[in-house]
Length: 153
Image (cartoon, rainbow, N blue to C red; front, side, top):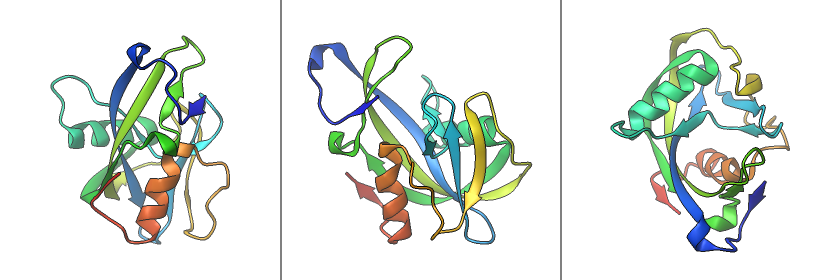
């Protein structure tokens, strides 16, 4: 599903997404186990026409987790194909280069729940993160844990 190589650039589209690293009051990081691949990732999704990046992140987080969050800062823009950002969707074969805009957020309110896009949603301690994280989420999580913010990669 994830690749670092585009075989035919003319048949590959670019998709802009917005999401966030969400930390709770105890320093835990929120991840969701996705139904499309069974791996853990950051909540977020595609930017709709006429929507700001922050609006997208807030909407997607609430839809996918039930939480209302406040944006605290900007982590980075992630577009490097070497991070596994070339995705082939198994349901239709679409090849997409995903560019992620990742914010830093904290929980304001809401009740944590799964959505139709996730098997599980939970907070993990910084030293207890699961090993099976989707490739595009690995670098943003690592950058956040290393205190590297405001990156464009």
